[in-house]
Image (cartoon, rainbow, N blue to C red; front, side, top):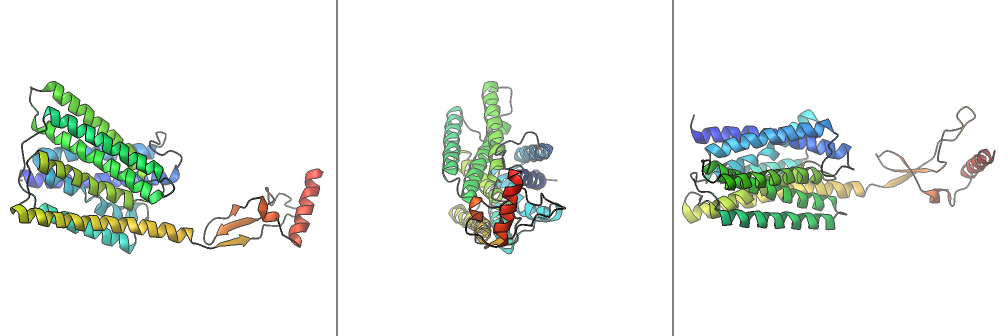
Length: 343
C-alpha cells in the first residue's frame, strides 16, 4: 500500500469519526441549550469528545503520509457521512436541499483532490509561526464578537461560530504538519510551543463547534466547519509550505472553481436551515379552550389561564391578558376559581 493510499484511508475513517462526534454534539446542544460551550456533566458530550479525539489522531497520522492540501479536503467529507449517519442512528432525516448541498460539496472536493500535487517537506519558521498564531487568534475573536452581536439570528450566529471553529481546526492542522516535518532532536522548544498552540486551537475549535449547534441544527454548522477547515489549511499549505496544484495556472483556476462549487453546497445547506426556521415562525397561532375543573378534579388547571399553541406544537400557558375580554363560561369559571381562592 502506498503512502498516498494510506493517507486517503486514514482521512476517510477520520471523517467518519468526526461525523459521529458532530451528531452527538448536536443532540447535546438540543437537549441542554443552557450549556452553550461545554456541557461537562453530559456523558454523551464526552463520547463526542472521544470521537473527535479519535478523528484528530487519525488525521495526524494521515498528515504524516500525505500532503496538507490532500488530507484537509478529504476531511471535509465529514458532512457527506454525517447526513446518512444522522438519519440511521438518530432518525434525523435531511431534506432535498441538504442532500444537494452535500453532493455539491463532495463534487467540489473531488475536483480539489484530483488537482492536488505532491507533498512538501517544508515547515513554518519561528516568525511565521508567531504571525500565523496572531492572525488566527484575531480572526477567531472577530468571528466570535460578530456571532454575539447577531445572537437574535440563530443560524447566522451558528455559521459565524462554526467558521471560527473551522479556522481554529485548520490552523491546528497547519501546526501539526509543521511539527510532523521537523520531528527531530533539534528545536525542542519550538516544538513544545507548537504543541501548546495545537492544544489551544483544538480545544477552542471543539468548544466553538459545540456552541454553533445551538439553534441551527446539524447540517449548516457542520458544513461550515468542514469547508472552512480545509480551505484555510490548504491556503496556508499553498502559500507557506510551497504546495501546488497540478497543471500550473490552469489547475489553480480549476481548483478555485471546485472551491466555488463546494461553497455553493455550503450555501444550500445554510439556506435550508434558514427556510425551515422561517416556516416554523410563520405557523398560525390558535386558541385552545382550557379544561374545566370538576368536583372530582378541582385542580384540572393550576394557573387558571387559557392556553395558546402553534399548530402542531405543544400547548403553553398564555399571559394574564388571555382573561381580558372573555365572557360566558370563561367568566363563570374565573368566578368559581376566585371563590375557591378566597375560601
